[in-house]
Amino acid sequence: MGTKLIIGADKGIAHAMAIALHERGDDVLAATMGDGADLVERGIAVEPGVNVTSDDAVAALAKRVANEDLTLDWLVNVAGVMFLDTIDTVDYDDVRNQFEINTVGPLRAVRALRDRLADGSKVGIFTSRVGSLNDNGSGGDYAYRISKAAANMVALNLSIDLAKEGVAVQALHPGLVNTNLLDVMNPEDKEKAAAILATPESAAEGIISVLDQLTVETAGKFQHGNGDILPW
Image (tube, one colour):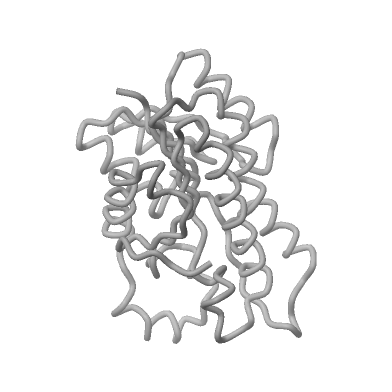
């Protein structure tokens, strides 16, 4: 059995995924920005200091994986950031920042770790339904939408290229989840949405189920954590 690498596991859905996979007996490597001390206490292997915008940090992660001669059953990039804007408030430096983390970050990670993937490996790239061109009926949130729409293309491109090596790649939408990403919302709006927000643990359960069932034949799509296929 190979290793399941979860990138962005400091908190939220990725943190919950790392714990859930470990508890069911999987070999997990959690890549974190911080020290991941609470994961280490649980017996989960941690690679700290992984900033997906840094070539050096991602290269260090790839070196550890290579030095330990790990085969990656799963490579799941959850690391992301969200700041909300309008046409009047959009900040182009923020657009570039979100693009670097949400779009280039997953590409950088997969490219660096590609030789540790094998026939039957699976790659999950967290995007968001707000990145869907067909599903956009409200506008706004320029930087986040742009970065996630582009991340969908990263996932689709990778699915085509890596399918030749037997690797299944899927763009993943976890649903509306109560994580720190939503701290940018107006507190009143967040409180109103509380009743429909999933917990990180339930969202992790859905994504794990999706990836468990993923094959090369079913890959190359934009999939909700509940299993539904979403429009690009």
